[in-house]
Length: 316
Ligand code: GLU
Image 1 (tube, protein in one colour):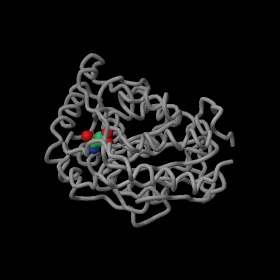
Image 2 (cartoon, helix red, strand yellow):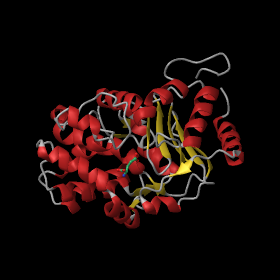
Image 3 (tube, protein in one colour):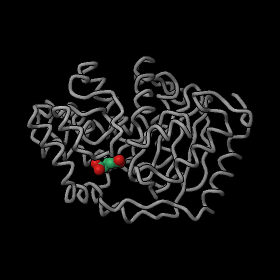
């Protein structure tokens, strides 16, 4: 089996040298401050060992990667009733598209496009004050990441709130169909804040480790969800985790993954590894350009694609 630490060092060195780095998101002004030269990667293997290279300890804005964790939390609260409020099909549309929502009477296609994630946030918020719901989400992330220093970057949340007109449109549209129960401002406030959580690759790989191991994080011994639920969340990550780039990500990388416009990607090699990668420059679909390339290299070299290995990689 290839030496994972050596593979990560090679990938980080290759990524550092690449001139094509994608474009840093600036529609949330605070995100434009990210350093396009950054690259980090962290992997927890099946033995619970962490390997990291590059800027793996620098916290970045996890943005839509938070949607994996809010989905997990909402399913824990209401179970399969969640699927009355949001679908499970890939959208084939940009992350913030409003067109489909109109055609489908306010019910978002899946929990990972913005509209779907806002609906999921609304489920978590019901029966609580916004500060309680956000506290619950942050506690969950700190528990999963095994690190109480994980924080909400208030400047990013405020920046998104100031400029989140399209998300406000999506939320209001859903509200008109009764898909949002709480005051739109409350739901959006919680949504913007959980997107603004900052985590490092190392923390994120730990937080996602339960998805790689049938719902239980072997590094901590803690159960998070049932094996069935972990499998289903992985299925949604594979089909919907990269917006209209989901097919391309499955084709190239072959792993369930969720991206965020902060340039992070959480990917899962079931039974084998939890992987977090970060590089702020994005491709036209809003997914980390070098993050995707690095994951493609990693999955190939380690033989981790869920669709099978090819001749050049060693099965594990
Ligand atoms: N907070 C971002 C938004 O709602 C999340 C988008 C993303 O990371 O893909 O626009």
